[in-house]
Image 1 (spheres, protein in one colour):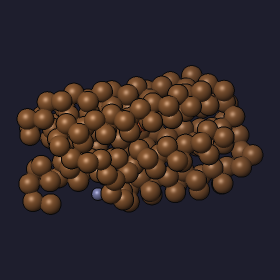
Image 2 (spheres, helix red, strand yellow; image 1 turned 45 degrees about the vertical axis):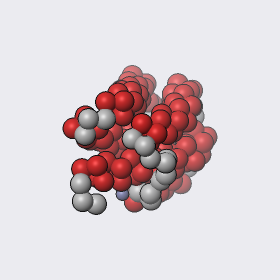
Image 3 (cartoon, rainbow, N blue to C red; image 1 turned 30 degrees about the horizontal axis):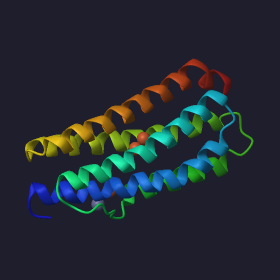
Image 4 (cartoon, rainbow, N blue to C red; image 1 turned 60 degrees about the vertical axis):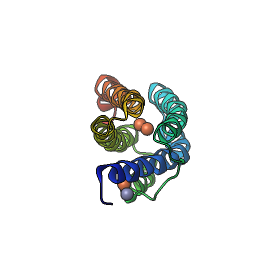
Length: 160
Ligand code: ZN
Ligand code: FE
Ligand code: FE
Ligand code: FE
């Protein structure tokens, strides 16, 4: 990894891997929660995530590269932790709250990555990539806000 363009491509491969890993992991997470509003929000975000994979393919295309993923240890760790929390909270009143916490860690990871990628695209003069990455960034921020809303308005009160 020598130039900013290299770093950009590498990190793009990183998030491409991450979105695919999230798509695989989410069905189990959706199944694990009992709150209807949370279930719907996670289902909606799974659909959105599949769209993000398509958008990332367009980003690769815009820089003249083939879409490919490179193992991201960070997302694997966050997913592993989520699976552990699901196991540990079997039958617990706080499961919905605990799972939201895990999902928000993933959203924050994504917000961090896409914020960096979007600004690198701008610095590299890749305006199409900048705009597309900005679209995904906005979706991640909205997903995070929605989870905060669900937690604060209902779930945190139920999990005492
Ligand atoms: Zn990496
Ligand atoms: Fe995402
Ligand atoms: Fe990574
Ligand atoms: Fe997300």
